[in-house]
Image (cartoon, rainbow, N blue to C red):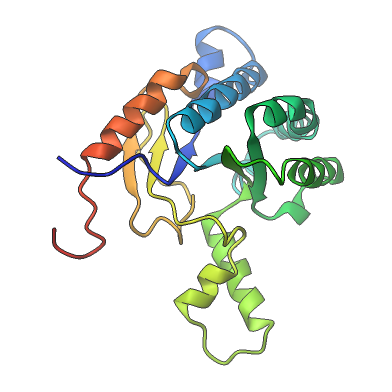
Length: 230
């Protein structure tokens, strides 16, 4: 048995929205909308379990390959729902931050992100980082370029860490994925050097507080050695 408390930082790869909708003969957009409801349940559950940081993989740099219709819907959903859920964030004490190439997003989404970050900046019950237009390799490249812009001759690992999108958030302790998939999919590549990994069969729109309790129970069993010997 391990002796870990709950993760300080939990990363979640949300998978299965499309399959959830298909199983019900609904359009994929319906799965994404239902997935948003799961996000609200799960973030509150993480807070209630005492997890201070959670990062959700919302839209990857590879997701632009999807149909124009689906991408357009997702961008519209982001622009509207970040604002639309502001009261929920305020009531629940949820600080929202975004990691990823925000400048590559439509202007309406950028505006919604900046406004939501600003209006939730003083909330402290849980910090929810949304990975939007995010790719782990892309984040590392952008970090390296920020370091190079300072005119250094040699780059250290510490400098890369300091110039990631959200350097104030600690490295991820555990990454979980829904819908039975077992890939990391370019998520938090730098931060996940010693992350615990777990996959669960339930499709993302069906996730709730019980799933987060299961994640915490699994994490508590893990023995974390960080390259050493316990």
